[in-house]
Image (cartoon, rainbow, N blue to C red; front, side, top):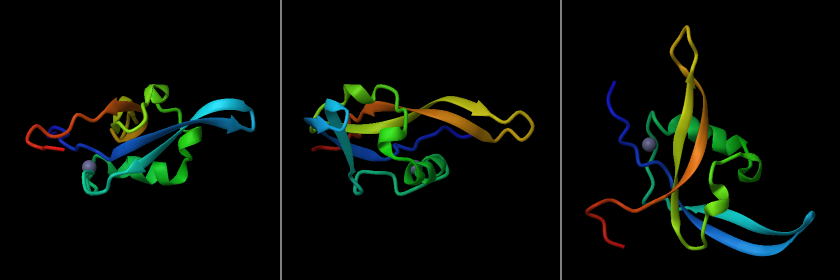
Length: 107
Ligand SMILES: [Zn+2]
C-alpha cells in the first residue's frame, strides 16, 4: 500500500462567541479553501461524502474546541477501523489539526 500523501481539505476557522438556543457558546464555522485543498482522491473521498451528510455541529471532531479564529486547519483521520473480512475501512474519527502549509508554500 502506498503512503497517504493527501493533504486533505484545508479550512479556515471562524470562531464567534454568541447567544445560542442553549445559552452562550462559541460557534465554530469552517470555510473550505478550495485552492489549497486536495481536489479529491481515494483517501479523502469517503470523508467528503460523510461531511456532506453530517452537520459539522453533530460530527464529533476531536479537538474541535481548540480551533482559533482565522487559523487554518485540516482534518486528520485517526482511530481507523477495518472490516475484518473485506479489509475495507468502515469506521474512523476525524481530528482537527492545524495546517502549517506545504514546505515550499508561502502565504
Ligand atoms: Zn485527497
